Length: 326
Ligand code: GTR
Image 1 (tube, protein in one colour):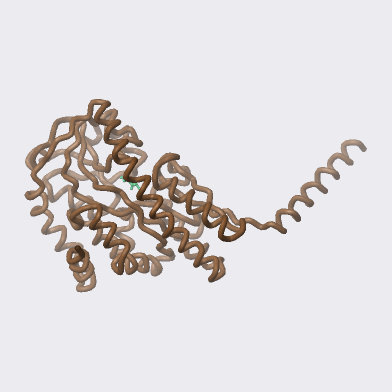
Image 2 (tube, protein in one colour):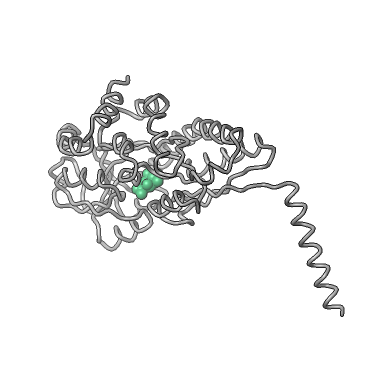
């Protein structure tokens, strides 16, 4: 009897909290990121969540699942398209085969500098690319920074394109990245980010390519001690929302989410600039040797890659507009 009344009390309590919950209904949007907690992209989406919470009086918030808890980028993109994940912060790279417009800013040496990239992505070209996600069950919300990607390896200092010949480099799962590495005379191995550390360690690959904060936070510098400043790609990161989750929001709430995403870009860039310096300092202090390289032969080697991906008048026009921006 005692047992029964305890149960009844528990059930009453549960129903009570359900009712209270309904009165203050809060929807927690699930957001994926491959990077660890504290990384600028993770912190920027958390900040966006705080803004949304304030601006919807607590009706919406964001929970960031960092460290690839929801899966590697290729899989999380599919899950976001399917509406299983609400928000996804990924590199543009894995989108290259899905949203053709994303291949253009991913092309090697498309941007002259990070400032050029920021300027372009903040303007009409950026808006056009964000819009292009809509044909693929996604809503493009914002672009974040990813600095410049450069090659690093476990074997030797690379100071010329010839040094790369025959070496095996891991790349993002994107044909643009594969073709870039092959055009340099090296061999590309597309692979999920989470597998790179052990692939470097066991010699399955000789190297990979990334920006300073990723090179540092993924600990690749512990095994790859040679970093070359070729800065071949300035690929923006992108924050997308599942179209299915987006359609559940009122037009007012959609506007709040869009604005909060835009506002988080400012925060992200501050965090990014500080993190880049910090990460570079850390890996250099840990003994990574940084080499300079003449970029001109690498730029020239990209001609066939440009020809392949700028395959329509629209994509050619997009590239021309990027290059024409000051
Ligand atoms: C990083 C990027 C990640 C991921 C990673 C990779 O720079 O921020 O989203 O794409 O590169 O190389 O897989």
